[in-house]
Length: 416
Image (cartoon, rainbow, N blue to C red; front, side, top):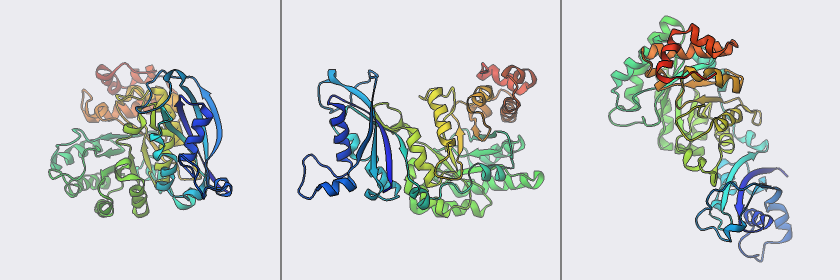
């Protein structure tokens, strides 16, 4: 019988083994009392089983509201539960019901966090994963090697379609590989998707006619599931080469629906991830979540970047990048997307830590806010990443790139 292994970090004031059994029972065959038809044979086939239980040091974090027991007795552990695949089949929504359903409400637990998932091959048989990934994205952007340099349209929202076209034209002429809508820019009345597509695509087509390479623009088509197909078709009919969906907002079934229909890469934004990923006491860690998003079809997936403006430490970010790059059930590799406070001065430190340029590196303010304009911002990013890939030092890049030196005046210091 095939199984899913779910790894949790838990805290409890009860004996650890007892708390683990409560969790296993609640998420499979059990309830608060043994019932008539809960036979030994049934439990043997369908009950979740404790695979391992390893005690960990306490962190000093506060217990979850409503948890029971003496706080002085709290203990913490890494728990691995084995769920029979027969309980839910290779279905992402039903998998989540088991491994991340009512368990967050269990009062015997003063902390509960899903940190990883080991999935059997049956999931890859049902879910094809990314259709394009690293190789397809490089082909469509015309960037066969080196870091793929991109940006987010800034201001995030408020530009008229004609103004957006001007920004895109400037970025294309600067040699950008990738441009994306902000997650805030959907299908609003002042700049609806159709108007943005009509404004942007002629600019990119004219650039492609002159240079033989079309920068990729990820139009945000996030919407109700019933509108995703039409939104996608609108982009593709105009010659677009990428669509963006906010994974947590359309849901895994919405992303999987889009993947089955999509003729272009799907840029997976992780908007709202912090609502369940930030706390060490409750929720789902990125390492577990990203496997589900990749299975559902994300060709690109946001991981955050080092020295970012959000809550994640460099260690957490680097683990997220590594997680997305790890093989998953033979699926096409997803592209890690670095963003949040990125600029050229972070290239060498990032490359030294991850050891690859199979990345999509997005700089919003790091490009649009460059003292000499967006074209210089793109040049600073390109110079820095090319230098890092050649094995040069950050000082070498700083000495030879005027655009990077000027960027450092605003964003510095450069990280070695």
